[in-house]
Image 1: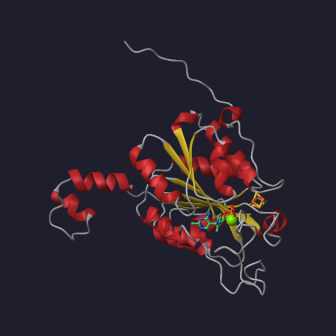
Image 2 (image 1 turned 120 degrees about the horizontal axis):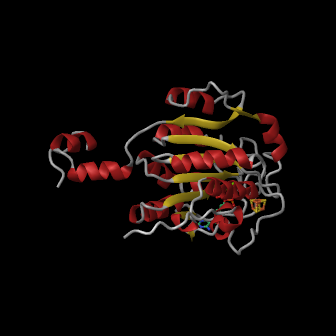
Amino acid sequence: MTVDLPVRHYELDDYKSDEKPTWCPGCGDFGVLNAVYRAMRTRNFAPHEVVAVSGIGCSSRIPYFISTYGFHSVHGRATPVATGVHVARPDLKTLVFSGDGDAFAIGAGHVVHAMRRNLDLTYVIMDNAIYGLTKGQTSPTSGIGFHTATTPSGNPEQALNPLALAITCGATFVARGFSAEPAKLADLILEGLDHKGFSFIDVYSPCPTFNKVNTFKTYKDEVDWLPSDYDASNAANALAHATSEDKRYLGVFLRREAPTYAEQVHKAHTGTEADRAKVLGGMFKRYS
Ligand SMILES: Cc1ncc(C[n+]2csc(CCOP(=O)(O)OP(=O)(O)O)c2C)c(N)n1
Ligand code: SF4
Ligand SMILES: [Mg+2]
C-alpha cells in the first residue's frame, strides 16, 4: 500500500541556513544569494534535493548560507568536485558557484571540459572582475588598464569573455544576470536548473570594497536585456550578442538541446555498434 504524504510548501526562510553571510555591506553576492533562495522556492525544491558546490573566494562561501547539502572545496576545483557529486548522485540538483578567479584563472582548465561534456550542472559565476578574498588583484575578467595591487601601472591584458568561452566550449544553456536584479536572476537560475545539460550563468556581482570601476552604477548604465524577439537557439547569434561592443546584454543567450555526459556514457556502454561509433566519433570499432 502506498501512502500519499502531503506536499510540503517551502518558504524562503527554509532555504536560509543558520550561518549569516559574512560579505562586506553592499557586496553584490547578497543579490545572488537572494536569487538562489527565490529560485528554489519557486520550484518548491526540498533542501535535501539540492547540493551547492563551490571553490574558494568570497563568493565561494555561499554554500554556508544555504540550507541544502554543500561542499566548499578547493580553489579552482568547483567543477571537478561537482562532477563527482553529480556522477555519484544524479538525483540531486547540483548548483556550482565560483568567482571569476576561481572559474577562469586557476579553474579554467576544468571548466572548459565540464562544458564540452555537457554535464548536467548549473554553474553560477559571481563575477566581480577582481579577486575579492585576497584583497583586490586583477582577475581574467578585469578590464584592460585596470589598476590594482598586482597591476599598479594598469592591467596590460585584455579581459576574457565568459559567455563567448561558454558558447564555444559546448555549454547548452548560456546566460548573464546582474545581482542588482535578483528576481530576474532567479528566473535565469531556475531555467538553468530545469535545463538538461550544462547551464552557465555569469552574474555581474560588484565588489564595492576592491573594484571601484565595475560598480552597481556603471553596470546599471551599461546593461540591457536581450530584446524580446531575440533567437536563443542559434549559437552564432549568441556569440554575436555576447561579443557586442555596444552593449553588455543580460538574459539567455543560448539554449539548445544536446545529449548529456551521462546519456553519452550510457550509450557508449549499452548502445548498438552504430551508437558506439557515433559516440566515439568512429574512432573505435568496439568499446569494451
Ligand atoms: C591553490 C590556491 N591558490 C591561490 C589561493 C589564493 N586565493 C584564494 S581566493 C583567490 C581568488 C579569489 O577571487 P575570485 O575567485 O574572483 O573570488 P572572489 O573573492 O572575488 O569572490 C585566490 C587567488 C588559494 N586559496 N589556493
Ligand atoms: S571583498 Fe568584495 S567580494 Fe569580498 S565580500 Fe567584500 S565586497 Fe564582496
Ligand atoms: Mg572575483
